[in-house]
Length: 378
Ligand SMILES: *Cc1c(COP(=O)(O)O)cnc(C)c1O
Image 1 (cartoon, helix red, strand yellow):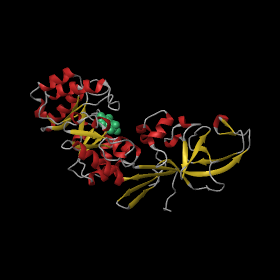
Image 2: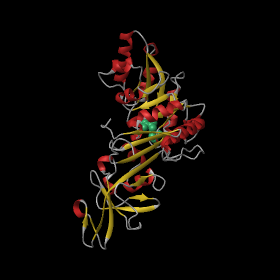
Image 3: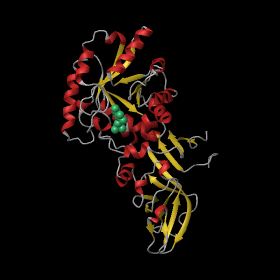
Image 4: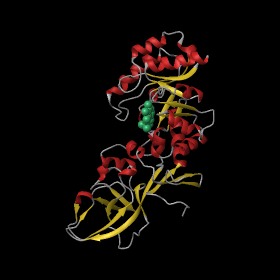
């Protein structure tokens, strides 16, 4: 028992598994560089821990979404790391971004202009990535803009171009024709900037074929082992989530459970209330579907998932198998994040990224466990 209360449940991150998944992808995409995408607090798991473990595994290129996330991981990374900020320059914070040596992904001509102006002011070239939109209509500059920049001789005096990138809309659907379309458009843009390293692939893109690797692959979800890395190496699941039993009861036929009394017992029913709810990122859409597990016994969710708790049917367990304070599995060997996502009608990215701040977090690396209190307690 650690010295601090455990909060709503326990999130265990196997950093050895994260490192092994990274090493497998890095070996698969070599000689391309494997970069780690640790945005959104490393998909809800804890960016400082994940990023520093990856650094120890040899990773030197990191991507986050926001400047604030770059500041968080910079605290744990040595200066030989590069940190790219995917969502671009934050207006008003260009000087901070430059002071810290972060590499903004410039997504619009105005951002290129602001960064160049700062470079002139400081009298030195600033590092930058250029993102080109090759068909997703989300972030990045259009092809005309890319041509204009390529023909602008002063550009490379002001910007040290570290990466030319784009993002695939349909990488998780390997047969989708948009993948080859985007690849062809990106190859054309790339020929305008022959000296600049290029990148098109996220985790799913990295397994579409070697022609998608270019010089750098941006691996996010695959680091956590919820999906195949497509590399031939078996992915090692890195995440386990356990919820605490906070009350046990038996209800009689006709009695209802939870908000809206959305479940009514048709026979005597043994229930456990678990201390995790939608405020912890456990989807409310799992009301009346989905499950928890105890050992290898499935415990279906009954009634609605509420903010801080939910109720499961424990009729399949022997009497007295569970006690107040015990843990049951929500993500782990019996139930993957992908299965939870399927039940909830979403994708595993969302299940992980929404994991809340009230868990006790256990980070395991090389046999050592680092226990973190729920956020706000430290
Ligand atoms: C999130 C993100 C990634 C990583 O995606 P995964 O599917 O988690 O591998 C890569 N590139 C960009 C631009 C992203 O936004």
